[in-house]
Length: 327
Image (cartoon, rainbow, N blue to C red; front, top):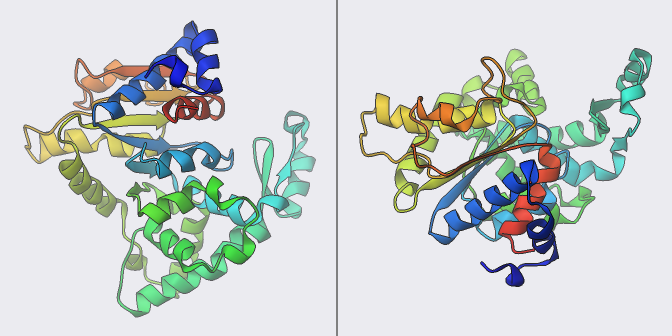
């Protein structure tokens, strides 16, 4: 796409982002766009506190415009977008967070604030406001002998309309609402370590719910495998990874699993790869591994377009999305 057809953000990027991580950002954005223009699909993986960083402002529009076909995210990102939706005015920003003493941190806890860098999530308004409604949905499913994935329960919660009374941001800025409206496939590996996962576990310990009412990580892998087999034809599926960890490592493994363990010798590799991370290359680190290492694991091909932007994803991801959206 010609730069003159782009909006002011993209024009600024093309004019000024010419070297180093800035140039890598533009290269990755152009690669993303080229992949979609060729008929490819894209997975986005969300680690870190991207929902609390309000990535939904740009990601929701990416979802609405079909610039993403599937998402893998941590349980925290799944729930924290909804928390921001229903409790935004109660969040507390602490710009001087580097100066906080242990006593200051304890006082935040005493006041029911859980800190993520400079942003404190309000426990009562965020966690408990969702808990009372999602618990009812869990109980109803169990009573009916039904089982769902964590994201499917969240979709039921959002689509029920019961949370609309609490909305405190423009709904168009919630990526989970956009995903629910499209019934976008989502994979949530390690959901158990999220707040809602902990709450669900507490109900299991108390005997109020069965663990089997929630579908598991192995079932998520088989769900993703089925999706990948059906969607990896043609230009294939790209992999856009925000930060590292399980949100990225879990889904990228579906390709070698299908090839090596299922012996599907014609399964395509991921056909585009980009990682945004502030984790520099280090010894034994997955988050800091260069993309070429993934060739040895059967995840990427020799010729797969590969990009890595070593920077803050809260800065980089919205700019790449702006390019893809033509802004």
